[in-house]
Image: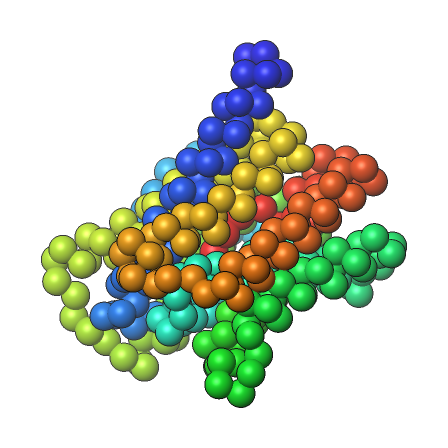
Length: 300
């Protein structure tokens, strides 16, 4: 495959992956209106584990069960499990586009955490991009006494945990993808089991299938995004992750009747601009892998 064909294929895979992530988010919002967050996490994780088990056996069960730096692995699993649970909790009360807009601020959190925890230097241009990103979050939240709600704060915390998961992932570069995904899925399962006592609604057969499909779609999205980043440079494909907000707007309006407010649209534009600026700055200063890690490619 030529470089051009690989890049085009990588872009296509990223677009498909982001569409699958969007469908996963829509299904999650739809199902969480009837079923509890614990139920979603349990059934979603069980279905995903069924899909990933053949890869675990191929890699070796012992290698998967005994990862490097187990303490940091556990911390990453804790962050990822909390982030997914908070996302489903947030979209129970927030329009889908609002929640996804706040989640797209994760690259801004990543840069700040990298400076505080990893000692990475932030120059003036990055500080300006960070300020732009937080201005976008502030505009999206429209923080007045009537609009700054607990679900919005939950979404902000969720985006922070997503960034913390990315920072932990930076320190685990040598861990195989199968190991990371398997433990991440297992952590979400345990989180779901812990939340089950807080509510249970017996699902119909159809909804059980949809709950299982939730995990399979999410797994497919992760595979597409991972393959995209192996086929093409991150600087080429990562900007396409911002199509997530387009799908969130379309699906939010078409399925849930949520019409975005002008404040949310302006905030989304500022957040996307900040993310792209950080991407360009990383591209100039570091290799492709650092670009990927700094932008936090992916979704809940």
